[in-house]
Image (cartoon, rainbow, N blue to C red; front, top):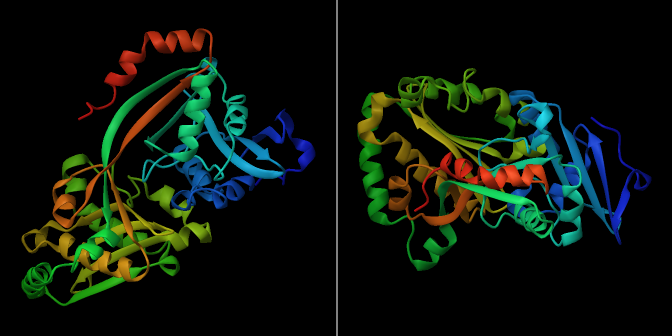
Length: 361
């Protein structure tokens, strides 16, 4: 952990705005996260520290203040050959890779952050309209930087509050179908439905990983995309759970059949938003839809705890649309390249960056 920053550490870049490039990940990241958009408050020091521990890199952080308060914190690690002088925001792909910025931070704050990013910065994947990213991208354009984007995916959002306003939700017909499937699923053994929260981490990841190791993720993809196995991304989530604030955001619904984990849904609840990170099930019970049964229970539980919006991110839209989800903002990956040779090179190769993404629409 780096030492606390004092006001004398900052160089002035505009009236009321100061900025400093700090080695490591300072506690000021938490201050910026707490002052940011409610749905972005997971972008804490512990989140970035977990990414560095799991995926590597030596972090540095641009910290900007405005009128004496932390206004933004931009963690960075080197990207590509060191001679290129490129950086990237570390983090986890799920739910998105951004940085914390205080609500109401001025354009001068974003301009100040650009000063320490080297020849270029990769930012994302992030949603269109992301507060910190949008302000930084706008500042880069104003300053003559090359700004390149590539489309990653369409997001899916479920507004549970709106569903409730429109009428009974879940519908009685849905609950009857679920009870029918639960009855037949119970023929395989005693069913146990549980909800995991802060006190269950990191030990609870073992049950989730056991399911992934028996799921299609392991058999069809080799397991690289598994969230909770040693060969997947377990190291990130275990490290992130050391931050008690983050651990309190981590939640899972777990179904066991005769004492053996059979299905899970892992989410991150941030204010009134539930980010759906991962779900999986053991294929032995596939014809009884254990994943769908579990997720309906999970949604109802979240609704009564005050969650109103479910952000399903990218991926299979079929079951999401059935439940009521609708398309949300696009998810994009950005490259910001400093004026001069980096920007000229970037503009010449912009087509290659775009082609490396997915086709929009």
